[in-house]
Structure formats: structure tokens, C-alpha cells
Image (cartoon, rainbow, N blue to C red; front, side, top):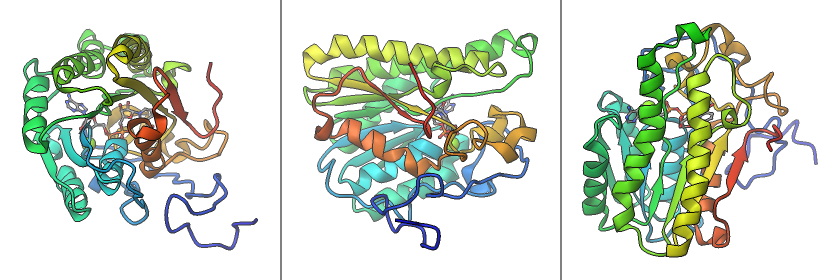
Length: 306
Ligand code: NAD
Ligand code: MG
């Protein structure tokens, strides 16, 4: 079946050639201060607002999604709501306008939305976040850690101690504190899904701190899976490949490389849109994956991993 002359699929189930399911974005060089606002990107990423179709895979679930204001986390929050879950999202206070859009989408799906801004680097935030999510949702049974910090630097000598520490503080220590705060609330059947990266296996030389933190997340999650599977809690990882999100223009990659973002790296010749990541998270939180634990699901356009 040729898709050359066909309109874009109406939803995530529509037939398409994966290479052209979305156009190659080839963004103009653009920069924003970290963490950036998705609404100010050109082009604005697709969170699945017009296309994600829920089929009842997470009915009655209570999910907390960090980084839920934009990019992959926002696409996950929207998909979870359309699958029937009530959703709390966490994000930095300066991202409120992006978060408002996601809250609207969750509520439009007829679900409860809870918004809890804060900084994962604050020692007390993870506990407060989980408590406010549990209060607002009436419990918690799906923890989805998507928040992450990425800052490119041309050379090792350009990475300050402060940057290295900040990257690990958000990506690794932040996850540790989040899991610790959530664990007392998680009953058997609950799920924890974390977010690593292709970089965990194939580190790019211009983001050594970030790549190492993603390796740590993958490793931590696999160890945690073994600990928690005995309590009936499944832990899994999603490892995205290049995905068009505000992480890149807000300092994640060299802005001069943006026009080629994803196209040279991925065998599919293009970056992903956040909407294409959401189904992996839905699968890992749903009962369809009841026998899957300690797994890393790569969603990277065909790059082979160990
Ligand atoms: P994004 O910028 O839209 O999302 C990242 C989110 O992390 C931000 O929205 C912010 O809310 C949160 N965050 C950052 N620092 C924080 C802090 N100190 N406290 C609280 N929250 C904080 O970008 P994205 O690409 O959707 O990123 C989501 C995840 O996907 C990240 O973990 C990232 O490492 C991972 N990832 C992205 C790509 C990609 O190409 N976009 C590839 C591999 C992995
Ligand atoms: Mg954001």
C-alpha cells in the first residue's frame, strides 16, 4: 500500500509509511532560555491533540507525569487522559502557560487534572508533589518520570561542575527522590515508567553529563524493577531517540545543527514527534504489559541498541 498520495492518518492507528508518517521538521536555528516554552517553537511539536484516540486502556488509573507541560511528558499526559486516567502533571513554574494547555486537554477528555509546579532540585519538592497528586487524584498507581535536563557543550572543559551536578540533580537524584516519595502509595498492579534515551547506549560527545545521567536512569530502573516486582509493581523504561521538543532549542543541542535534527541520526531520516512516544508509555502502564518488567522500550526510529 502506498501512502504517497494519502492524507496524514486520522489517529495513531492509521496506516502510514513510518518514514513519512510525519514530515521531516528541519527546524530553523532558534534559541530559548532553559527550560523554554513549547508554544514559542517553530514548528510547534505535535502532542497528539488532534490525533490521539483513546480506547479505554487506562480507565480509572491515577497517574503522575513529571515534565508533563511539554514535549514527551505532555503527549503522555494527554494520551493517558484519553485512555481514561486522571492525571497530575509536574513542571517548572516558568512553564505554566505550556502546562495550562495540557490541563485543558486532560479536562477536555473528561478527566481530573492536577497541576503541581516546582523544581525537582528542591529537596522537599518530590514529597510535596506526590502528596498533592495523591490528594488531587485520590491515590496514585502510575508514576511516569519524564522530566529531564539536557545542556550541550562543545568540550569537556566547557562543562562546569555546577552543570554536571545540576544535570544529575534533576535527572538522577530527582528521580530517586520522586520514587522514594511515591513508593508508600503504590499498591500491587501499579507501574513506574522512567525515561532514558538513546544516549544511554550511544553517548554524544557534546553532552557527556546528560548521556551519563541517562545511563544511570536506565541502570537504576532495572535494579528498581527487580526490587519492586516482588511487590507487584512493574518498573520499565522508555528510551526515546531524537524527538522534536523544546529541550533542543533551549540549550539541549548546538542550535546550528537544528536544521538536520534527527534526519541524519535516525534510520527513518526524521525526528519523532512527541505524539509518537506516548503509546509506549501507555503500553507500559496498562495491563497489556502485565508480564513486562525491567524492560527498556526504545522508540528511536530504528537505531539498534544492545
Ligand atoms: P521538554 O523540555 O518538553 O520536557 C522536559 C521537561 O523536564 C520540561 O518541560 C520540564 O518541565 C522538566 N524539567 C526540567 N528541569 C526540571 C527541574 N529542575 N524540575 C522539574 N522539572 C524539570 O523536552 P522532552 O524532549 O519532552 O523531554 C522529556 C524527556 O525525554 C527528558 O527526560 C529527555 O531527557 C528525554 N529525551 C528526549 C529526547 C528528545 O530528543 N527530545 C531524546 C531522548 C530522551
Ligand atoms: Mg517544558
